[in-house]
Image (cartoon, rainbow, N blue to C red; front, top):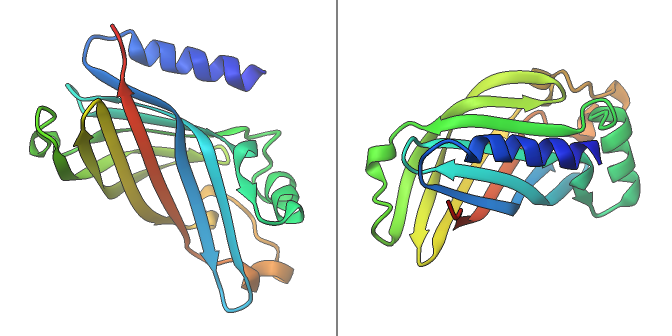
Amino acid sequence: MKSIVSLTVFLFLFLTANGQKFMTRNGFIGFNSHTAMEDIKADNNQVASVIDITTGEIVFQALIKSFRFEKALMEEHFNENYMESEKFPKSTFKGKIQNLAAVDFSKSGKYDVVVEGDLTIHGVTNKVTVNGNIEVITGGLTANSKFNIVPEDYKIEIPGVVRDNIARNLEITITAKYAPVAN
């Protein structure tokens, strides 16, 4: 319940500033770990995000316990042993589109973007720069990105006994369909 309240407050504060904003509460973040030993995949379809198209600011927030795995035991280990989701219940990103002028929000089309900002996972914040695209569609926007993270960069400890089962670089996929926010 605390997480839902903090998410609502977070998004409300972001939305109160002037500008034209687009929002989603059901964005997608997935990750994939591929090794010779095992493939591990998890999906989260309850990601909240806001884009301010006048400033290029973009924020994401994902509840860690909302990631779903094929096997229940993987989900349990992910939450309890690796992500410590009781202690670190969410992951956030707050950044800015670096090449905002390259996107014509008044014209349908797909535009390549570079986003730079702070990614916080497991209580650790790192600066990241990722490539993606924004598609301007009738009635909204769609944003997509694929990039890699290294669990150790976020102090996520992988025990030696399963180290070979988890990729050193995790592939992250983001897809978010945004609707305009009424002022």
